[in-house]
Amino acid sequence: MIFVDSTVALSLIGEDERRTDDARLLLERVITAGDRLATDAVVLQEILQICTDNGCPEAVEPAIELLIGITDEVLAVDEIDAIRAKEMLYGPERLSTGCCVHLAVMERCGVARIMSFDATYDRYSGVSRLTP
Image (cartoon, rainbow, N blue to C red; front, side, top):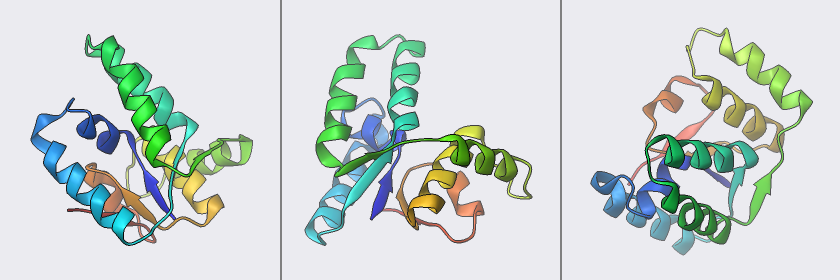
């Protein structure tokens, strides 16, 4: 299974035009390989926040519909994930809170690969960030 973060979804709908083609190539590659895709509920919340904060509320619906459409599962975020994210937050990798939550969910679900344009994930051992 491969985790999909908000940077990929927003790129696919053209919110980050610099990366739209890269996101499409990456998605085509993993779909062709038959990999299952997942995201988590926090990614959906991030899309809501990013789009409205950037003055593009009209991008919320296509981004969320696309993400739900390409993923096989939306993973829940629970108390265990929040506690693990807190532990990661104070680690030597100096990760953002969002990265910590996603990594905690991935860890609990046994997901070791992520589709993301956020190079911050490269600092965390045990996770492989897929790039085009």
